[in-house]
Image (cartoon, rainbow, N blue to C red; front, side, top):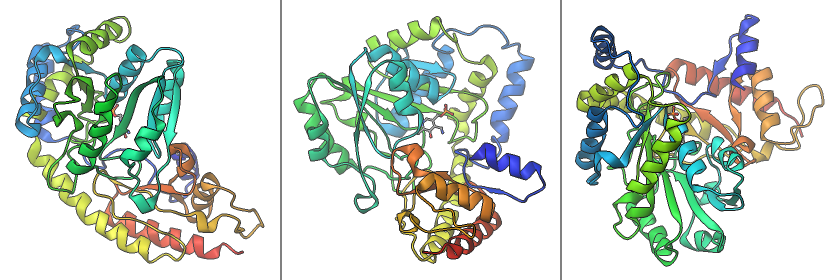
Length: 381
Ligand code: PMP
């Protein structure tokens, strides 16, 4: 959708993009300054495969101070983004035929990474009425003797849903019965969280050894292009990730790593400014979505996405008589008719929805929602 949107824009059409998964802010100045300094200090050579010791220590400190979690630097492996970390974990843990439980909707790459490892994804469907969260009963029903891994994101892309401590505790009770299942906790949206405190499933001692936290700098510090992520895991898993990465990408960009140290030492102020803007926009989009007949939405508690239900438009026709059959058709229609780029929910494993990113200016969001309302109003039965 982003690509199609760009093509339309290159023809001079004013397209508003709500399809991309990145903050619309610039990287904070102190982080950029740290990168410039790193260049001047000649941090330009190969770095250790799992990252500079100072960065791994900064991550250890962050996990202790912000999350109350004790790790040693040897349990941290820095990578070229949370995406590589996810891929490293799946490639090192999953053998052909192993099952990976993934609640839907999920971030698009999860299931494809499982395919690369020749594993099998087992999906647990959720919907808007359960705020897109699974129950312990659903989890237990999906477990088989072949289950190796459970993977999820909280705050979630694409729904913005956030599991509370109590909800995580209820899932942990199930995992306690199945000691061979690992838990991959994607916490990349940790800092864009509108509930009081981020809750990691790693805080529960009974499963702690089996939890692999994936996190990074892309979303919190608007550093998507810098490619900097990491895992925190038990030593064996960390060592396996280090070994794999040593034969693929090696240590990530030296300059980005130096900038990451500064981000974790004193970057939180800019995170809070960004969060305030997202909070304001969330309310704006929520009110505007609620004003569109046929669209049903919840109020996401984190990240910067809405995942409204749009299935009431399936079976309707556009002005040329084309029938909207699924969420991709609807996203394409909104692009061509309303010049707003969104993503069909089928890309995330739930066809009845579309994903809207609100990482855009207030003006762009108001105009985009006006166009969406107008375009949907033109569809006929
Ligand atoms: N996990 C989720 C849920 C994401 O949305 C993204 C980015 N869209 C990533 C991981 C990857 O982040 P990174 O840029 O650090 O690779």
